[in-house]
Length: 111
Image (cartoon, rainbow, N blue to C red; front, side, top):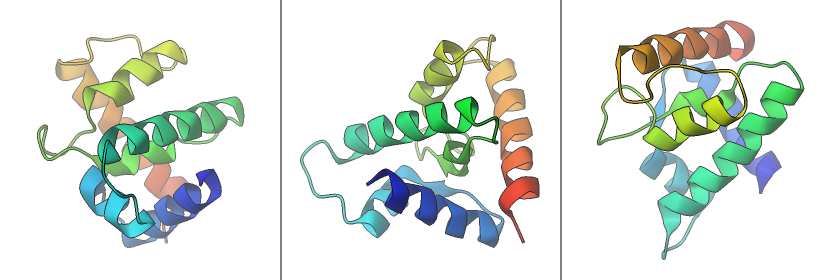
């Protein structure tokens, strides 16, 4: 699953725009129940791999419908646990961190 998720996000990076959790879950064929929480767990595992490998976090390409334009709270909490984010996960720092990380992803993987 992790490789399918990585490839889907690599493909998304080529478009130059983020995708929503729902769109990504549908693309990967996730079935209920707990579709989005399971996707979130997979994204967090991918984040860990990216941080360990010193790559931009592909998970930055996945954004929430509830928090338009940025990922869900779990993204920021995972980034904090990984030691790459130290701000308020609900504040301005989160938006700045995400914008920077998204730009890193698109510069690194985009077309």
